[in-house]
Image 1: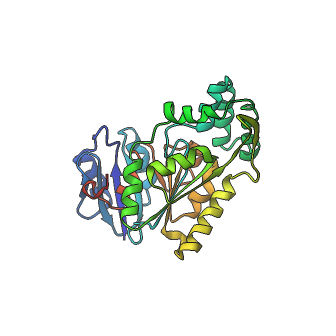
Image 2: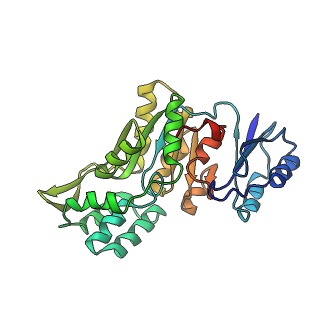
Image 3: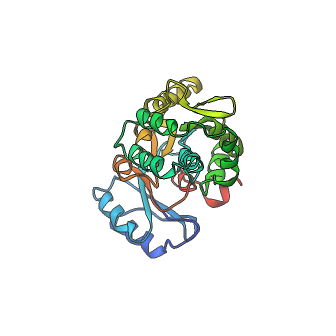
Length: 291
């Protein structure tokens, strides 16, 4: 059995019953269940539709996401999440670079790296080099004044943890940010890169080895072995090319507002919903969300 989920941005609850029924009827699905009126609905299917991506494409103009997945095991026991542009709305290195007066240059490198056009490790070293001389104290100011949580993130982490899941924040960014974000959101652990400094100033280097694409896969393997659970029980979420390894290996890999090169390789693509979409695709109703 399979489950088809249709959803949209909770801030604009525009999912219409007619849209859900049209897809259900075309695919011969079972009765639709509303997980939140106007936002998310699901229905069962006996087979995987052959034209699911054509239907998915047709729904994009309506600002509706569509996910079709196996019904068995869709509630996951581990949340493995990227941070930048995933659990937060910004790229932390771009915000630091803006403070250092090199924002445009660093943002362009970030864009290319996240699209898979540049080697992640080399791109990170280049960007960090441009931060040399920036006061370490700027990090706290950036977190306070520039960093905002991605909508739906608190509910996602709290709800999965309340249902027995383990949550890990695994970022190609920096521990100075992940430690704070993990603490605010309630992640059980966080992994990221460390910015080196000479006293009060960043020295333009990052501690080796750099946590990149393979390190995120390694985190998935390490955590599942430690918890003695299968990798199929992991839900991973990210947006950039360095997330693809863990997204493709996890039982559910979610491309959230992702770069096209990333979304194209993932079966779960959330272009319109927020992070609560990850709860809806697991079958949680809005009233089951934990604040």
